[in-house]
Image 1 (spheres, rainbow, N blue to C red):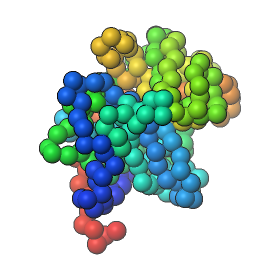
Image 2: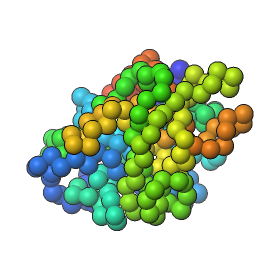
Image 3: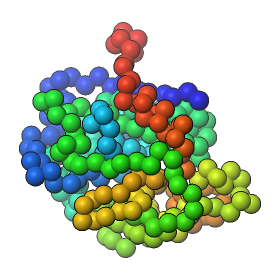
Length: 264
């Protein structure tokens, strides 16, 4: 497979201009946040993203369809991440600007494949974003079977999560995620949950063994949406990544060096 990455050159004076400039010295956990971006048609849209623990320290995971517009066949732009966003409050760090984006090229041909991707952020003073927000570990091989999963997102005007669903509140659902029956095509590539998490929750984390007291647990999926028939048009699905594809894309995303600007 071939990964695809996009670099956005942001002038230094604009990279952190929307950040509050305060740091979470008490390591207040805010790894999950609202992701705002502009689509190729000029409209603004929203997803959910999560800071993950990496050597780079400035990485988040979200859905590939939040990064790449499958209809316009082009990248979305002007990404701002609001870690810890809740109840209309942007969180202690404000907005953090994203500048590189990485997905698998197979997704651009079929949106049911590899619907996850990584975002790298500008951060200041040699610090790492994960040190100020906290971060989740990831399962590099999504475990099989049925197990308790906690899902987060920012749904707006849709879905079934028991929360305001206004795009302003971080919503949470807990229940079992499961494998699909083997009579469905490519059933082993996907996992499901029984609830529709709604628009705005795309890219939100599926956390295995979540501990609300320590904010611990492993990300074992991210919200995709529905799959085409014969899959049921209900609930929410996630790509069941494997170590080979997940670790390779993450490594590419962490190490991506943009080409010279005269190539853009």
